[in-house]
Image (cartoon, rainbow, N blue to C red):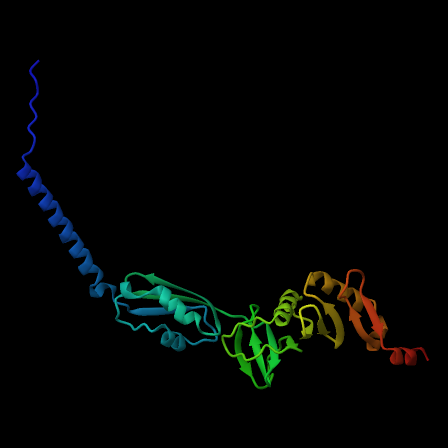
Length: 255
């Protein structure tokens, strides 16, 4: 059987083929670069979703992005950072929608409570972030937090006061619509509530709030016709709730 003869390509032929491949690769890269930076990817539209209280025009101003820019050049992380600095915005997601659209999905903060300090009513979300302030209550029907001083605050400020944070935890766990009119929070261990009907509740710590709410309803159900004689209801300790009656009022009823 005759042997097979294999001819190896010369070094010159191999070098030529490499040069052709490199040239083709460079041409492809150049074409891709030119296509990416072409008017095809020019930003033509910015769409906002989820914003109710912050206007699209205000969001557009915060973004620092103008229409006509190449969509590849937009730093979506930086845009999220700029929009997230707004005190009413909790979360932001920015997505490129090819070829020339930007979708901005916004989650606004939800008002949870009012904090009265410095002569103003400050609206807080559940994380203790200050959303805005009002000189008067107006139509803001939210539980009021009093008895504490967080120091200087303003829109966008995250409150770290432990008493206020404990009060927010209690308010967040309350049944809806909330029966809590006010939380007096001098410290996280000594919370007191003003319940619907102007009942004063000694609540204690924010631990196990659902269990304490159940005790409050249990106590209120047992009052019947003596509601106006109640001085306070105490659920701050383990065991059944304690109802303290106003002795003068209670004596008048008996007479």
